[in-house]
Image (cartoon, rainbow, N blue to C red):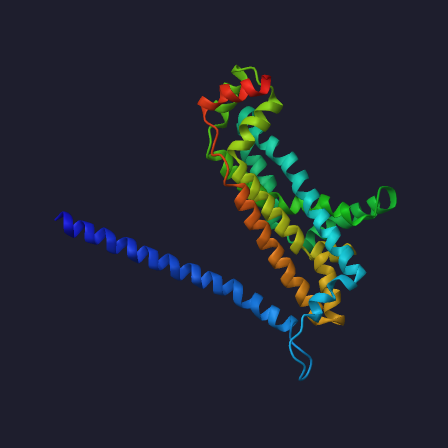
Length: 280
């Protein structure tokens, strides 16, 4: 009987492993085949000419493209930092002090998902016209709009991280050791939701680097807008930049996964040591 049960369990694990392998291979092909086709197109020679990396070598020769890449990276960094600084402490505070407001906060944060980007532009256009005349017309002001766009994705990621820990118990324990609110947030909460923070940061970076509608309609040249313009003049370089941006996003994901391999969640037994280190 035990042998039959063991054989059944091994067969079940084998089927599950085969299923996972098939799904991973299918997903890999789904993402890699289009990227490989794009790379093949960007290296394709004209006429009977052999393959060349000329399109890739020309990327740095377009000043507007380089400026758009720099601006998009700056926007990604600013948007991610502002989003985390505003959203993470607010979610912790609502969870601790005003739990009845959680549904309202969730509704507000998820609302941008229900509003198309083109509709957001209609409401943002007068604001950006005023900002351009009275404050600044820099492309970096798009970070205000992008913070709104990334709210739903960042909220879901941070909410999952906070739901996985006992925020109230950890906070009360840290406060009983004499920790201030800043110490509680930075030394207690953040280490426990590091994975959620990294996931929300990656989602924010990916969304900003891939955003087109708002920037185009507000007449700002970010990476995607410049790729669209460049595609009319040199399709090979445009596709090369698109492939490079996808590879860059993949590299960011890999780097964030390495940052997420550190110490696990902070337990109550570790709080006293943390506070000793803080006081020392």
